[in-house]
Structures are given as structure tokens and as C-alpha cells.
Figure (spheres, rainbow, N blue to C red):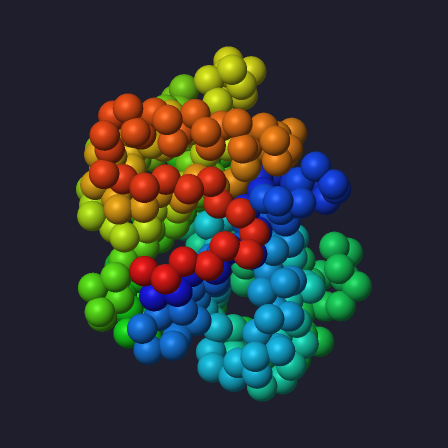
Length: 280
């Protein structure tokens, strides 16, 4: 399984000189399975670069799109995803978590002539909305999903490939929400148990609270705790706070590495950045 990060920023794109190293594009992760099948998690502004790469490669297989939810930072790049403007592209979209989200996806709200000038019926690609199921077979892998703690609802995914490699994608999730959670820390740890790579929203630090409590994101400390409870081999800290520049993320990374060394933790943790490619 090969994982490529095209967008790692949360809430809003952050272009500029102070975010060059980690990147300013919002959520998008490309995954290639053992048999070459393609999965894309979220369609933030990072999906534009993903599309350019696919077109340059000449990729011709079906594309499986897994949206965590429909907030702007996770769908804003979809109209600029080059492959959808080719009639030979097949885009298979996993079902959304809530009925309201599913209805919005079926109505293709982004392509309504108001939010984007081209309407859905004029998009050349064949777009298929997959039916509800408890799990899906995608190429050589099985994909499952789980509800997350986020305003309006969000979903996370686990991918188990035929060669034994595994990944979980859990973004826009508040591990300690102020109201009754959709899912507990322990349940998420079981869902992500023994994965090779756990990608999780780590937008906040403790100093961001209490102002942002209930906004649907987790602190770095909570995410590290989840990774250790799940016995994840590698943790990717993701969905970075837009007000934190490269230097601030570097400083946080140094603190994280020092803490893991002190704990003698077997888990590896990495501050995700655009362009990072990881072979599992």
C-alpha cells in the first residue's frame, strides 16, 4: 500500500511563504492498494494536485472517493479535480454518513450553477454513488467505516489490504467532545487496532481550549494516546490548524519526538506534510 499526502491543512487553505514546508492545501490523501486500485480520501484543495498527477501518469482505472463529510475544506477542490473533466473517468463515491449529507451528495450541490458555474449534468465523468453496506470490496482491499465526533457528522475509514497492510483515516474527530460522543476513545482504538498507519486530525493543542471545545477537532496529546491504545505502528498527525505556520509545527514536532523517546514508545509519529509518500 502506497500513501501520498496531497493536502494536510484543516479548516481553510493557507497559501503563503510561512506554510511552504508543510503545505497549505486542505485534506486529500491518495492510497494505492496492492493490486494498484486507487482510493482518495477527501476532496479538499489538495485533490487538484492529485488530479494533475493522475492525468500525467495516464491513470485509467476507476477512482474511489471517500469523503469524511461535506464541510468546505473537504470538498472545495472537487470541481478542480482534472479527471472528472474526462468522459472516460469513473468516479465511485462512497455513501455519506447522514441522510442530509447523502441527499446533498446525490444532488451534487457543488455543481448547481451557484457554487460553481458548471452544472452536474455537464460533468463528463461517470459518477457513481455506491450503495449502503457494512463494508465494501475495493480492488484487493476491504473498506469499513465508523462515525466520528464532529458537528454535522463525519465518518472515518479503515482499509485492510490483501497483503496484510492496513490504514485508518480519522479526520475531523473530537476525541473528548463536550456532549455525548458518537463514538468513544476505546471504540476508535478497537477500530484502528494494529494498523500500519493511523491518520488522525490533530488540529489543536491544549492552549486552544476552552475557546474551541466542541468545534470537532482533537488535541495532539489525545491523538497520541489513541495511537498508543490502538497499537498503531505509525501515526500521521493531520489537519493542521491554519494559524500554525511551519516553524510552529516544527516546534510541536520536536516536543512530540522528545515525549515519545522519553516514554520509550514503539509507535512512530510524523507531522504530515504535502508530498509525503509512505510505503506500508
